[in-house]
Length: 272
Image (tube, rainbow, N blue to C red; front, side):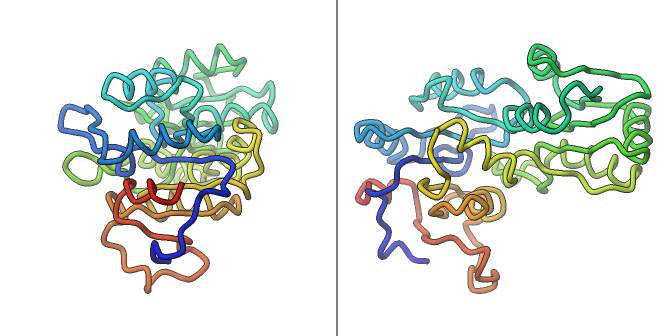
């Protein structure tokens, strides 16, 4: 698991986490690139290999996240960012096409999903419930969702982890809180369609056009990022600059450990 032996020259594509890996955010939400982050991205592009940043942020569209990162000094194209919204839409098109969906999302994401053809309902007739980031919600809506799930509606969640790396420590996931409440009311566990999930693995394969076994997944979160890479059979690199910086990997079951560990993303410059 140490950086010794790490080689990425034969990898055909790259998947990066953002917060805690390529950048740290300040209290105002601005992203500050980590040392070496910009150079790593530029060196990968110079090699002709594709990359994508997969963040579990789901409050705005991927293109808006890309625009914000560019403004903060991280050069990334609109097509180089994925969120759970994209993997959710692809999953729903495969498994819930035409079904009525109750959404717990922000207004920009509701508009994005409606434009993609999702039949949105706020009534008692939901056949699928999707929970991403929410600023606020109400108990009546959550109760309707819980009843729908108890009748057989599928409960999908962009994420079901406790939180994410933030400027002042972990940011508690509001989406996970809402999903947990609906799951309790409906008597069903949420199916995650963001990181880590097979839906996200499928989205990476489709987006990059490369088998996930030929990718490297780099991130700071043992559960979300390394978990995503391991699901897809990818080479995994844990960066000790964020959520899992203090995790004792000797206490982690072998099957869940990353292939390699580095202190910062800058360490990748010598192995690309």
